[in-house]
Image (cartoon, rainbow, N blue to C red):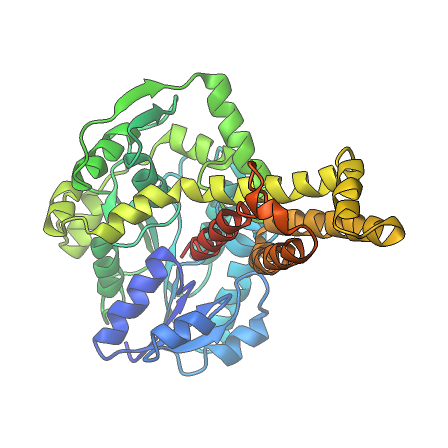
Length: 431
C-alpha cells in the first residue's frame, strides 16, 4: 500500500479517505474534476485534475503511474449539464479499469450503491449496476462497496438534506420513503483501509449498513435533538406537493444545480437502503457504530447549526435573486419604461439617452438574473450584480438624489440586495 489514488477525492467519502491515508504517512494521489482549492487545503496530497468519463485509458495510464491501488469514489445522482451517469458509472469506469490494468495496478476498491444487485428502478442504479458488472468481469483484485446513506462530520446530498430539514420548526414529512440503515463515515473509511491491506480478500461485493433501522423522518428527529432543538411540528405533505418538489429539483438539475430532492432520489429513497451487514462484519471484524452515539461523541457546534439553518435557505436566496433581476429587467423593458423615462426626465436626462439607459439597464438585469439561475454562471453573475447595484446607487445619487429620501426608499433598498447576493456567494459551494 505504497501509493494510493483516490478518484473523486473532493467528494464526501473521497475527502475523508484521502485525508485518512495522508495523515498516516501514505502517499496519496487525489483525483477530481476541480482540484485547485483542495490543493491549497491539503498540500500533502498530490492532486491531479481528471474526471471519470472524460479521461481516456491512455491518460489514466499516465496519471496512475507509480500507484499501487485505486479507490474509486466518483459518482453522480442524475444526468445534468455537468453529469453523465453512463459516462461516470459505466463507460468511464471501463476506461479507468483499463488504465489501471495498463499501469500494472491490481487492487481496486469501488463505491457502488446499496440494492443495485437486486433492483434498478432508476438510471442511477442501472448504470451503477452496469459499472459493477464491468469491474467484476475484469482481472483486477476488485472490491465493490455498497453503502447505505453515509453520515459523518461533513454533509452532502442526502446527509445535508437531513441536517437542513432538522432545523425547521415545521417539518414536512415526505410520503413513500423506505427504511434506512445509515452507516458512519468513519466505518466506511476503516473498511477501505482494511481492503487495501496486503492479503485482504478481494473479488467480492460487500454491503455497508449501520446497526440501526430508521425511517427518514426518524433520522431528521435524531439530528434535531443533536442540534439541541425542541421537537418540530410534523405534517405529511400530499403526494401532489411532493411531486412538485421533485419536479422543481429536476428543473434545478437541468440548470446545473445538484439538489438532493429529485425524481431519482424519490425512487431510490422509496426503495430504502437497509442492507445486510453480516458479511461486512464477518470479513472485516468492524462493528458498525450507532449513529446516535457518533453524534453524541461530537456535540453540535454553532457552525453545525448555521449550516443546518442556511442549507434550505440557499435555494430560496438564489431563486429569489434570479427572479428579482429577471423581473426588474422585464419591468424596465415593458410596463415600467414610461415611468422610467419620466424619472430620468426629472433628473435632466431625456430623449434617446434616457431610453438607452433604461433599456440597457433592463437588458443587463435580465442577463444577471439568467446568469444567477444557471449554476455554471451563478458566481460571476452575482459579482456582476453587486457591481451593477453599486453603479445604480452611484448613478441614482447623481441623477435622482431625492430617491434616497423617497418613502419607498428605492436607493436604500440596494443595500439589502447587495447583502443578499453576498450571502448567495458565501453559500454557493456544496462541498
